[in-house]
Image 1 (spheres, one colour):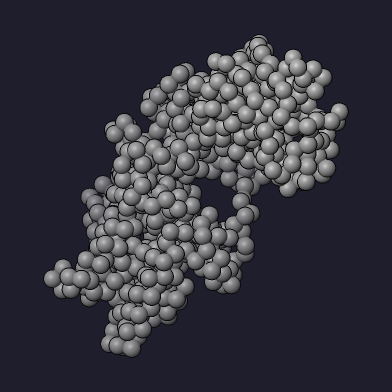
Image 2 (image 1 turned 90 degrees about the vertical axis):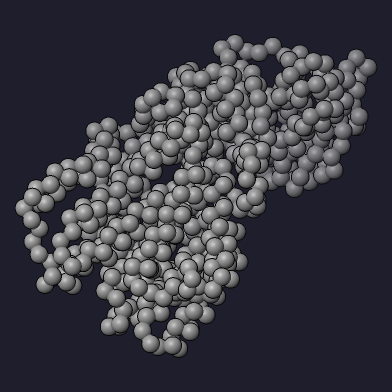
Length: 640
């Protein structure tokens, strides 16, 4: 520390702290609430893992990161992801510093490269979620540190340590097996370079090593063996066209969204069009990997470069090239990124001051550029990190970004052990103290049955067969609804009791008999007998009432002490473009607001929703957007 100016030290520490503080966010990511949090929930509520692949196709995927999170969360009795990721982030930076120090680099170079790593936008993204790549990077750095230290003869602890790191890589994720092999290759290259100095291991060490290989092999293969026993496919659901598990379709899964082709052009394009290679903003790939990595690979083979630095190229290139050739998804490359930053130390070795000066300026420029685009690495970073420093801020972020969590908690409070159907676009029931039911590709056979539903009777049988207690409906998207979603909405309007609402999400308790409503408004009755019903505040014709682009009040409703409404309308659109706005403003609480797509010339819409607590009156609005005018032929509002 004394060899670094104080301002340099303070600036680097502030940079690292600025990055690590993003771990304070609560768990908001789609994959976490769809899958990663499930193991912790099952161990908490059932004291065992179910590995229910029929409800969640990824249930038997390598689960080391989920098991680590589950253990820490059980001890904390709360979601420990933030603390775990903070620890992993600190460990990653410490390992980078230790390896650079082991290579006897100048202190200012060590600190410069550490700050460069801390500024990498992908690191901030991984601090926000339970994705596997952060743990993979830490384990890989530990293995690399042992490989660099494995010199001057046999060191059984180093060999077994690298084997353990390789086994952990395989246990974390299937691509981690490639990373584990790359670490073993680095050790082999290290030994080959000093082959004259490596003696044969003593007999008693070889004997003990053989026994220790048993738990190492178990760590590496137990999740694959368990998947094979449960499904008949050791890497389920991947490569199922080869293993032909009956629990999935016989096809090799691949997300074609991220497959652009293995080429140098796509590698360069990833830095400028990052959103096409990762779920983040452009220019967030980490600029050092575009400008400094090619230079350091060229400078790596100089005689002045330490041998320990040269072997770092083995896992960087071995893992990086294989992964980028398979799929051009940038997050999958992160385990090689810290090791690639270590490789960049080759630019500061030797006596070429011009090269070092250029590398210094380039590293500082890449750090500044990384920090400039850093907030675009994740959609959650639209909120400032300090918003999550206190519990109240965390809860507000969850309510804003993942409202399904609050409704799941409501089911946990009311009826733990229930079966809940989640919307196809929001299969995020991992924290449910029961059984989340998905009609998505996470449950392919159930999804197929759901998509083939064509009438109300088929929907009723589907819900009965699944033995559902609750269902969630999403009012937030105006995009075209499939027939099954429409049938589900109509079934819930007749049989579903609204339990709670959070934003655009409504939680219904399913019943066996139709609910009894009383009518408070009917458009046709008001047109026939205006003196005996709720009066109309807009002109009407025998064809109905026109909804114009300007919102207008159609009628004033008196709901009394009702807690639930049923909104029914029959609409005629001039085309399949635009939306009709179903809206009721209450005297208390949030309005009922729904965008209904114009799907055909003549179609109907029905939905049940909550009436805010304490609301006694409401104003029924008509509005149409991007469709010219929409003719409302029939409209009724019932309450209970």
